Structures are given as C-alpha cells and as structure tokens.
Length: 344
Image (cartoon, rainbow, N blue to C red; front, side, top):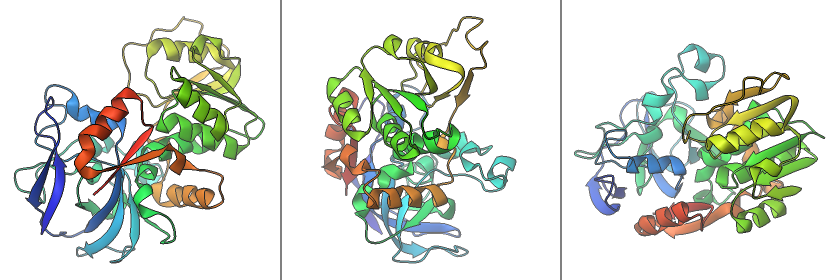
C-alpha cells in the first residue's frame, strides 16, 4: 500500500515528506493507521553525526492509531482497535519474564536501531514502530489497546515521554503520600512527573527549569515550589532529573535528604563527578528507562486518570500537521512547545 512518511535522509538535512510503498504485516506484526505521533527529544538522536542512527530512516516512537490489519499469530489485538504504540521488548529474557520489559536485555538494539523492513530503501523499526507516517508496522508487544472514547490523536506521548515521567514517580521511585520530590527539567517528561507526584499525594513538589513559562505551567499542574537554579532546591526525599546535565545532577544529589533517592532519565551530557562522601548518608542514584513500566498495564491507568481530570497531559500538547515536522522539531529545540504531536 502507498503511504506518506517523514523521511530523514541525512543528519543535517530537513525531513522530507515522501510517498512510499509499505508491505503488509507479516507473522506477529500489526498494521496501524497513525492518528498522531509525538515528537520526542529521543528522536533528535537522528541528528547526531555518524552512524548512531543509520539513514535514510523513518523515526517516531510515540504513535497512536487504529489497527487496520494483523499478521498470522497475533493474539489480543483486533482490526479496528484503538491503540497506543510504546517501546519494544523481547518478552523472553529474564527481565522481561520478571515483568520489567523496559530493562529487556535487547532494549537498546530493539529500540534505538533501525533496519530494512517493510519499506524498500528506507530503514524502519525505530522503537519497533517508526510512526512519523500515515501508517506503521509494529509488533504485538509494542501495542496497548485503549478505550475508544478518548481523543486517540493525542494519546501517542503516553507511549514514551509521558509514561516515562509518570511511571518513574509512581513505579520506579515509588513516591509516597506526604513525601517530597524535586523534578529537574520541566519538559514533557518532567511535567508528567509533576502531575504524577500530585496523583501520588506528595505534599512538596519542586520544579526546576530555566524557562519561566514552563515553571508557570508546572505550578498550574501541581508544583508547590519552582526554581530556575538547581542549587536553591530545599531538602527532598526524592529527586528526578530529566536534563542529563552533570552540574544539575550533582546539585540534585546534594538536595536529597539522608536515604533519599534520585532517578535519572536524561541523556548524559558529560561525565558526572561527585564528592567521595556524596552518597554516604544512604542516598541512592538509579537509572530509569521508560519509568520501569509495563505499557499494557500502565498506559490504561494514565488514560483513566486523564478521564478523572487528575492527569491532564493534553495541556502539554501542541499539534502540527505531519507536513510541518521541521517546524515541530524547531519548536522542540527552542523550548517553545512542550510536546509537539504530529497529525498525518
């Protein structure tokens, strides 16, 4: 079938909208008509010079849409289902079998790689989906069936960025009622963490960011304190860094109370050097992928919280036509938009 997709042909070139031939789903695969796809900072890895992400490639890993066809051996998903597409995992390694697919033994090659697939001449399979297109081929472990009474075109970010922020707070860190947390970086992941901290019942929720308009949004979403300087954060039991900036992370460690826990999801921006006694009071630093969530159980929880008005992730979203993907990318880089969602 003919589809339209945003293709990145070189790290320094703009995306081009191209008409391509997409093969149908093979065994274990699902064809999804994309209703919306979030633009995530992880998609910017396609801009890194070299072969980190081979090209030409279709990126996009926060897709949502409608199932149009299924291949042999697919169970639990039917044609017509509304779905959110999330990360890929093998399902058979020790961490997957223990209910922790975000730490799958093959997470990085499965999700941060692309290969020849259903489109001749263009690489696909980014996070098992490549959803910057009108249609995508994915696998059953990527798919989360959701209710049909919610705005499907807005749900894509639940598959990665929003899930990462919310699940890091509710699952990986286990923030408790009456506790305190500082969130460093008020982008889509950080603001999702702020909303989740309010859901968890944290009574002190600190947001740190350089942009005052983002801090204003954080306050409206549940932050009780905001700062532009990480060194001013008061003592907290939990910390959550989305920036990857070593100086910010060091300040976050310093702000932890004894036995406090700091979760890291930001891509590292350099070597992290800590004082030899920085963790002496029982402090812990943990790396987190996708919030440690099982998408098939966690994403429906977020949808229900949204229905109740307790998790208004839609306030983070600005929509763009797929053809305006270069403008959406520029808005992401400038910080003008928290979460662009592309509408094919």
